[in-house]
Length: 349
Image (tube, rainbow, N blue to C red; front, side, top):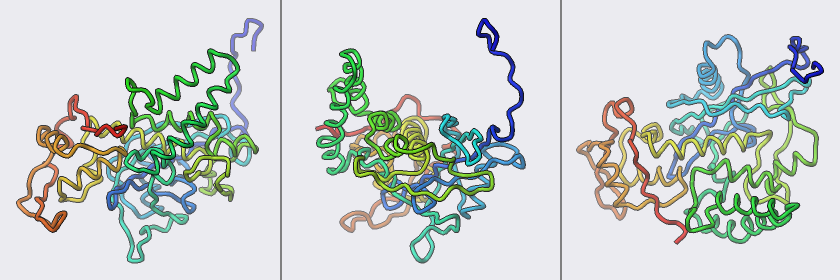
């Protein structure tokens, strides 16, 4: 650094301070009307692996790693975000970055009901196990928000050092958790809500970070990580913790997919080849965590010409025949759903 504080070029970092990259996948499926994510280490981490120069692109590297390790094909893929916080450290002190991807697929189960995969105890988990407050269809989530989350956040807001800080914190709580009539719950704010709970030290990861030294990254260069536990802290809110920053990465993927549903027909990747309109609606409800108005939802699907009848039926609710549909050929390549919104029911009553 020169006397005028102008940065000077730095020499190449030593190997102990090298930057190492890992690929982390938020792999989503919907099964039996529930949103599911692939996890490893008995639900403690997302699938992850080192990026190597043998891959032509990052996306190719992520797809190849996940498919080779889990024997599970991935459909739609897009990059989420690169996480490079200073606390992302390897065992030997090297800086680690995580390049995350969202992948959509259909869940495949073996004959014993477990994931048809061999990668490090890979299993499917309901993503609301990690974020129970995000499922607004659930009475439990409503009670959790009303009796624990909102009171705890208001206490945290009142603990700010000055009136301006208290007002700012309270404004964030009301906006991100939809506590005012003019700012209702926004299902896309998954990450913002998690980060607010983290800042207020209401989730296990924040308490663990405050109580211990920084952890190594989830996947070391050889594809392994330090054995550890994501055990719950009794001081934290309900919701399964994950190792490292993987629950934050999961929140990013959830938010991206929820937002994507409103302008791209990405549900195509989550549905079987044929389906009923009720199954399509239930998939949208599972992802958004909100009830949808049945007639408005079907009207939207019809207006956007996303699906077509197959001419076949299946037994629906109450044993009545229900028409089977499929996505129109080429719908994913033709256009986005311009300016449309999912007809979300007012869950606040």
